[in-house]
Length: 524
Image (cartoon, rainbow, N blue to C red; front, side, top):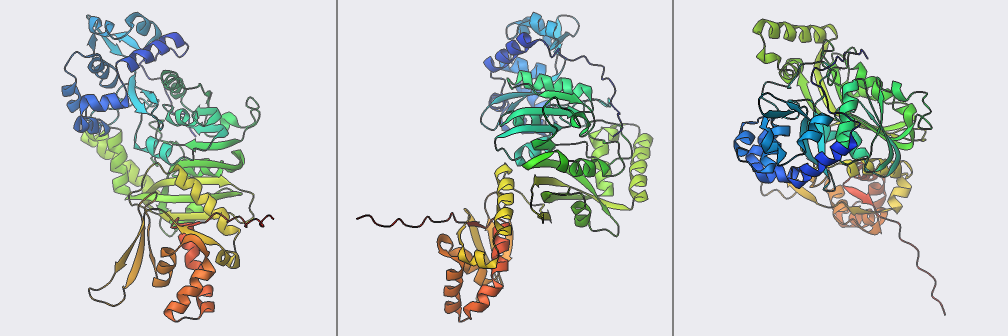
């Protein structure tokens, strides 16, 4: 990857002043400068507007002089604040000395960085640090076009955090850490966290995010992709139980912005980070990424992604969205605020994007999630699917359960499956579709109310089978009863239905029941 980072003019707070950072954290908490406090202060409409990068409602809601209003205007909305007003909330001298504040002219002070409250999964009060204008900003795009600018929390960041498997692990690696949100989450369940980034400014900001959030420090390393950990014995080895990355996945004609443009051709950066995970994962370890991929003329996108999966890994890849090349170019031109520049410059940049895509015969770009698990099995499972519909986050447990079901299915042939018992997953409902008054439905749909919220068509036999699965009877026994009810040969159903049962297990509609322990012999 090409190093496109350059110094951003604004100075950052010192990462080696722990006393000042602890005092600032205490002041923020005392004023209830938290995710819950922000919602209570602003109200739902203004709070939601911040997520859309619109600040006017929040500015209107913070015109008073309460400590929380002062801090929101200072750190979140980047408004200069009078020194005497701040002195009632913060240790101004300490914040100036450690670099969290700067003189703004006259008797006013300003923040040097964005600080956004962020609620952890167990109610933790965390704070995400980013460059000015990059936690929230105007509708014109990011707050700075400096190549090394560091963004705060966005939809991609929270999506990756929500799909990550959160089992306790010894070691975790966050590649392209940015503002440090993935390292912050990993610190809750990993003994050791290593965070890397090509941009040294991002590593500095990650250190600030962790410190201000009261989280353990991470091992911060500068470099591209896996280079910072390859052949390095500082941590004992270069393999991990968990690897996560929200990489610079944008497929662009150049490397303008380090946080989004990978500097490689097409989707090569995403391919490289996925393929490199295999040799850096411990047995049973997970690697989870967000990625963009090209849809190329004459090539199945599913096969393109299958070719990315490293040897020795199971994979579950979900395409969440597809955009044609014009939609994609416009999205990222707006992200950088290019639509607010000179029309001729905007048109030239737009042309450059389309030229790149046409040269590589790219007709669309997909976006989604890639989850890998290191396995010693001879025949890895690779599932590539499209699911653009709403899901229920967080999905970390659903990802883990998917791979557990993969293990179960690969160790149970049809004979073993028929001897097993199943339980219908929670909140699964049945829908029957057909003409009014018809004796039988045209088809039956099973729909999940949780997790991926899948819907799948089944025949009446499979629907009946699923409906009576409570773990008390084996699959074979249930099918024999259904055969007698519908007048079919039991052998025929035992031969035909296991394929449908496997699909229902794979997709999480049915769960294998825990084996029942044999009864003990009576004593006496």
